[in-house]
Length: 176
Image 1: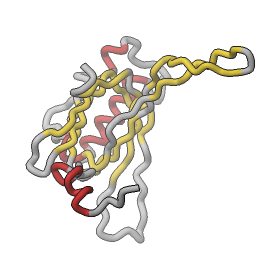
Image 2: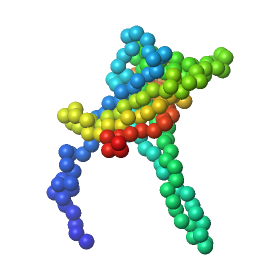
Image 3: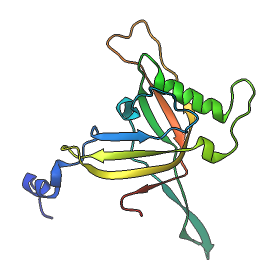
Image 4: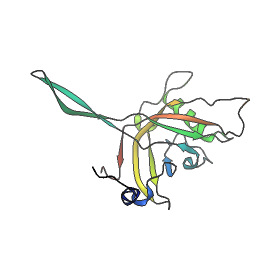
């Protein structure tokens, strides 16, 4: 077995490796949600992830064995963490969006998916700001708006909240 050294790893780590803190998220809220003077969501999104998917196997029993065959693809919910500003603009937008889907008081809401779904883009950036990888996340809508914790003991902290979005599917720059 060959012993690998630092120079071997360095030769394989072209570009110095992708950094998890170099990303940007672009959100297209539904037209009914957007109000004037809406801040750029890109700056308020503190944490996100590159989306994943699962192809579930189908087991076909045959003479005591199980043949694994590829089944359907599913897409996990996608979670983001958002920084809250004093005008609550992004928080209010998510509250309005979710209320349009299902109103608090009347338990009614929009029925046409095209009126309440929106697309998101998440991009992994290089150290020079160029895009290394791009994901178009299609047909998102929020299903969970996390609480904002209030605490007298918190110092030097800016509020943030989580949002869980359902997605229909995603495409990347290598899955076209």
